[in-house]
Length: 336
Image (cartoon, rainbow, N blue to C red; front, side, top):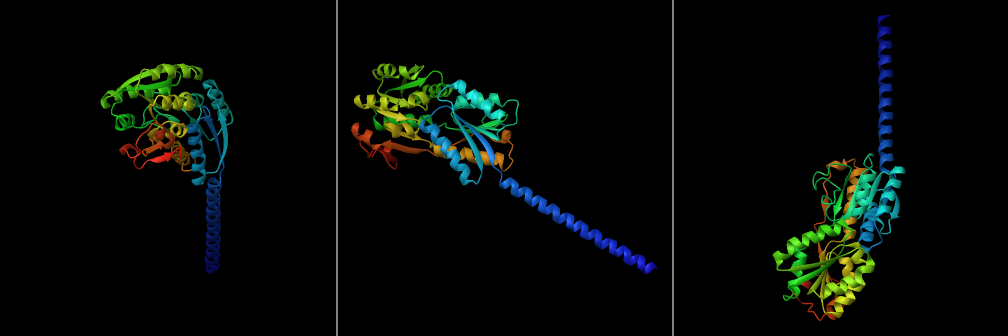
């Protein structure tokens, strides 16, 4: 009898062990299924872009292609505000209503309104093509962003760009800048140029415009007062790059841009960032948030550390400049 009891107890023990093993196997299978679902998830991303512009378009393309390269599956809804700042708020509010997984805001006004629209939500916001997100009150600090917004800045070394003027022509003493008075990003850059210019022996003349129709008159006025032109990353002014290029060439005037798209459009040279690569850098941040589960408030604003010198061969020849000057060595060439 005692022996039967022992056998019965052993039998129950075996059954219990098999049951536990089965549960463990099912649990492991369930966990694996969850991981597979997470890896195969399609994220809903809303992109708010201020306007059609080569640099902003490049940033968006870099972001979208960066996601693909990183294996992040996304259903992307792209909305363009057509240069109307009020539209960026409507776009952001729509994305909030749609309960997207993440918003990408391209350019300062889009980022400012995306931040405002998501203030009472947990939707993460990434920005790109923003020069100074602290000055623009998008984040609290470059390192400790303090909320649901972070991203990548297009800030470059203004000093290194201004130094190029006298490397090309030591006679340049005063440079001119046209800028959009309604663009916070532009105001930040102009302030920086005014601070840095005296350090490299330059004076600065600025003229602000309210809309694109004012560009021809403002340019005619500015070009009479300066030795050369500097184009900051201003969306409105950049959309008039052909006018600026034509006027500068006619006046045998050197032009330097803050990034490469205006050089492709007819300005002389830049030592700037690639907005396409900046977009890919932003895609990496999106992966860290969506797939890796990183908390956005712990992610500092990132800056592209890689710059590339690019010059327009056609404009260089029209100005009669020597391509063997040190500033043009090892540079990328456009406008062949």
